[in-house]
Image (cartoon, rainbow, N blue to C red):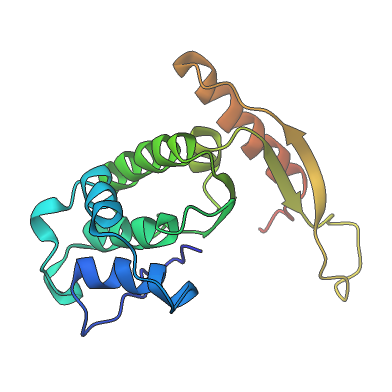
Length: 176
């Protein structure tokens, strides 16, 4: 799982944070250094392997969190708004990197996001959840309002993002 905040252990360096996640699942065997080295290369942090979390930028820390989540080669990767605190350039780079890594590792990914652009760029399938404005205030559940497979062609991304926004506008009460 990758959270909104990287949630790195502050007393461990980058390499140790990744190794800890891998070893915590199976205390009987340590991960080979080659696995950690490969992940550090894939997230472009080879030169930061001995840095403590307080020495990292937000984008670097989030890349450690992604590597840590992939270290055990999970079947499913859960992402809870992992890019929301990042600047637009870092966010775009991490979206592309996450898509590349999950494709390479053949990992199914479930992402929760409030950013339609993020959903379209990362997902193979997008479910737009919203609460119908006609339901009672006590009903806090959201339902699927749209289910589609976005195109990853640059010209179609804008159309898909606008389609999500239009769907959400239908289910958002207008405030004066």
